[in-house]
Image (cartoon, rainbow, N blue to C red; front, side, top):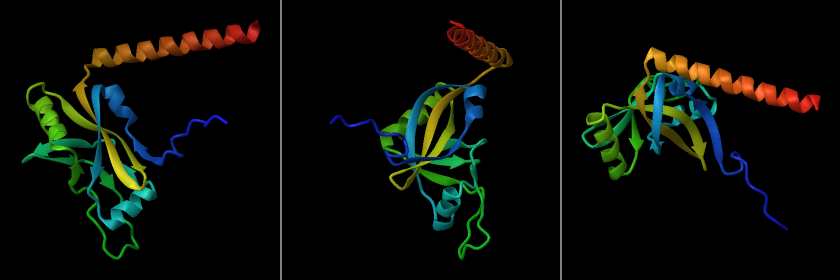
Length: 162
């Protein structure tokens, strides 16, 4: 009997939040996966999906990576609460940190957070190197998405007719 492919949830991945706006505002290139250093009440809030990563980005300081702008809601009943918008450390290999630092310094790129999820019980973020898009580029992206949507609609309509 052939083994069936596993879905994302069966592989132990539970997506908590996505930053769909990042793909619109930025041209995303290389992606990285990083762990997060969290305290107990933050993990509990993440499991309740009480988080906002829309304005989150990563910085490099003293050969360490940090995420800023990520808001994890405070639980009212937590014995030891946390600061909602504190800077959190990212867990990356030193080579990855060097690569991100070089991209930020030399190429003028930004590191944005695109996804937050649990994999095998550990909180992870997906980082992407990003170059800002101009207003004209954003308009082009909208036009191409609309054209693709219209083409797909025409194909499905043709299949239904005949």
